[in-house]
Structure formats: C-alpha cells, structure tokens
Amino acid sequence: MSGGRAVKPWRFHFFQRHLEDDSARAVPAVDFLDSVPTKVAAEIHAVLDAVAAAPPPSFSGGGKWEAMHDDMVGYFEVRVQGGGKKHRLFCILERDAADLGGSSIV
Image 1 (tube, rainbow, N blue to C red):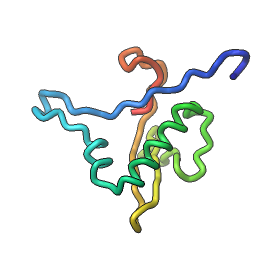
Image 2: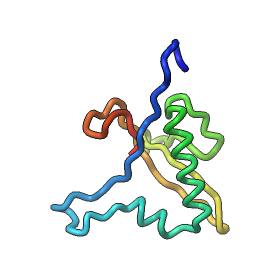
Image 3: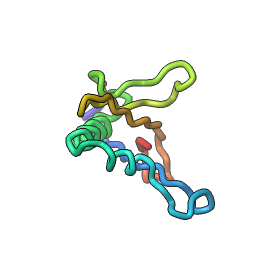
C-alpha cells in the first residue's frame, strides 16, 4: 500500500507487428522466448511479473531489470543468464496508457 491506497500492478504486453507491415503479425518477444531454454523463459516471465507488481518506478532491479543509458535512454532490459549465455529482453514503459488498459511494460 502506498499513501493508504493499494498499488495497482502494471500490465505487460508483447509488441505485435501491424498487419500492414507483416501479414503474419509476428510477435518478436514471443519468438525470442520460444527460442530460449524453458528455465530462461520462466525466469524472464518471473522478472516481468515482479516488475509489474512493484511497479516499475519503484522496482529494485538486482541486476535483472536495468535502465538503459546513452542512445537507449527510455528503454529497460530484463537480464537473465542461462545455458551459458546472457539473455536480454528490451522493454519500454507506458504510463497511464488508455489504449493498453493502463500503465504497461511493452
């Protein structure tokens, strides 16, 4: 609770290509998650769930949720190690996005 009010979790959405740009309407993040080991995908989902519940502005990343810098200011990344590799999922935050049903991680 914050100031006597419950903190509403943020939503998360995976970017989907527009029909005019891609007739298959690809969802690159889902393709990525399908390509990594199951344990890595589960950990990425767990990080997204934790960030959404915190919500993002007050989430302490612990190395798994980090703000980007320089040319990528405004982006965040989920960082997960697994299978001998570092896996990264890039995100942006949309505060009070009515078209997304509220504040969202995309």
